[in-house]
Image (cartoon, rainbow, N blue to C red):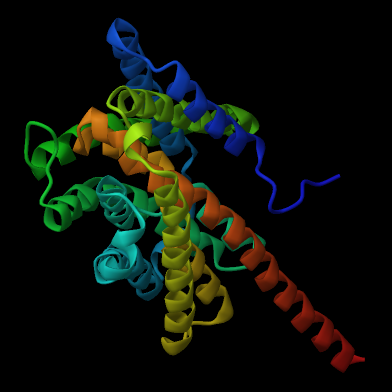
Length: 332
């Protein structure tokens, strides 16, 4: 029996459990240093594995559709930040100051790779273009996100400028990704047969980083400074932001004359924000005590986007089935 669509999956339950654990048993002292080292290592391993998984043929198959990629880039790195700033009078009263900083940080992040491609495939969109665009978004985010954070929040990495942040993120994320991709001929087939390994590292890295981030935040008084109305307001804020983005990307795709497959790709790649990239970047760009509150909007937005886009992908897929059934009926 399949799980009802709006019930949380096992990973979401694990994520909530880690937040609860960090709230009651936060990492501190030497243990916190060990957790930080393990977290850095497992995140680097994650990007190494993603690099090894990425097919060069898939990149070349989708890279030629430059107009679609351009508009996905605009949606991800231009439209989102503009919306985050433009909606400030409406959004900022709903949450605490640090949460709103987290919303603006969320708006600067690259698209998530796995779910963007999975939903595009489920909805019968342009999958090669989605693979190319989502992967490029992740790599571009290593450069673009620190610059946007510096411009929008007037915030740079602890102890340095935007270039320092880019360098640190490149060493922890981009370098392992490139090394993994270069080793693809040696380990690519093995990873395809053992997809569960990448999934385990993917989810494990997020759980480690969330535990470390929330431990530091709890020790600094996160929950004492975060009233329940602000958490409710944050959920409303994330829903508003996602609804506006989905509406604009759908409308924009049709105004630009994209076919249905490309519209699906623009909607799903242009509306996603990556927790896999975002939480490690937050660790570099913000003080440890602030990271927990700042990644809270990202964690909530991530779950909302998964649930809403799962339903949307099914609607797109049903529309395609209805068209096929109509064509078959006309043929008879």
